[in-house]
Length: 168
Length: 422
Image (cartoon, rainbow over the protein chains, first blue to last red):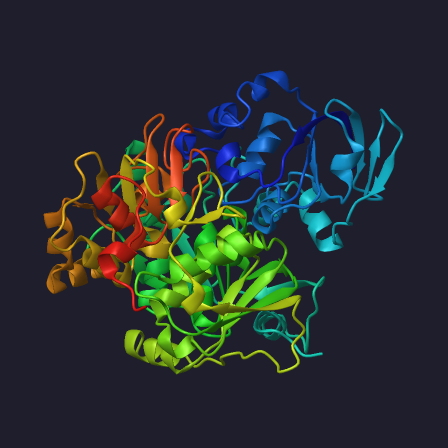
């Protein structure tokens, strides 16, 4: 699994209310995604393209358990690379099948717009624009298995523990 | 080296002699708590098998009674789930209604040394019960319901020893604001509380602190067990299952060990948008005009919080320019406040007291902020847009500070209304 795409930079402690504001909580997910970063970066959802990559300062995803990671995936963000990822958000990344890595030094290595190549095989993050290469923290095998399966729901569907549906 | 409380519980629940920071563990889940948002169409997946319905608690809290058709539909789905699997610990709209974390505490559903999951970030609240309790995602809840287990990353632990006693106008919310303001985020780490002040700290005070562990971005927050905890469990849940409370080893390895002297804490207020590294003495902000004041949530909806507000408001009036909204944490607390007279004191002063629900804390209903408004809140979170329009400013303080501010119409020090010992 490797992703290559244009990067967008975000500051420290980006919280889940910014990704999934409560005022759109009851809309269907395909409408919720229009509100991503509407409070802190209005218009971003129209500027970004499918396959782009988020590069962030520490503690990305601070806050609530709402399915904010799923919504970034539904919007078409290829993956997240952050200095560190909030513990609850990290769970949701793995469990909703949204690829995410912690990579100390990543914010120094990228200027917004640089192209990143992120490998979930050798856990490296390469700045294609500058040639710089960084080591990310490896994802434990058990969590990589869940991520590769597309999250927990496809696994539980296969075991007949939940009913299949189309929603992520 | 020995283990911290969290490490001991994670070792025991994963069937290992010991765990270390950096480990990934799979643990048995003793209690799964579900709430109305779990049953929303946009996240719910029809569960075909529940491993043990007696491990499950269901409480409608985020929007109860239903705030709109979508939340009404979630309640309906939840009721069908409860009926289908025979869930007995069910808190529907009505007499047993309340915020899930408050109900877990007041009914002592959480046993010391066990693992409790809920897909609300403030689940760390139950850490006051010497539990591994964590807010997880909706998929984790369905996994635990159907498989009875979950995974955790083991992090390092910071130990806080609480000493001394509170000044009259100070409460545990100020202690939290002191910790968040002084030490900032605790991401990837656990926090463990104990120390000589514990005999003076009841379960409500402890729970305010563990609930706010989510705002420190901590993995887990927990308290040492003691007689106050054991007596609370015996009183609130007679016939509870046997448990093994977990104490830290004497030579437990902590990332840091910090002493908090309660006597030195003054009323504090967090500035808008984050509580991390963002606290100021209330005096620094005195005079800041407010439109709304809120007291409630899983962190500050206890009877002690309502009483604290009532002591400030007794015989006084909320300023004409301010809306003071008070939301008890459960209908049981609401009834307690009605019996004791606290409710009358609050409404005579001009507060609007709502039914027990998450309410204004999550910006879902019952006190949503409009564009450009300023609020001071005794609840869990002050993120931009959290309580309504993203241009609203949310300051955070204790229930006493919020009540004092409601009277003045501007952010105010509660010491003026509660006196000081010195």
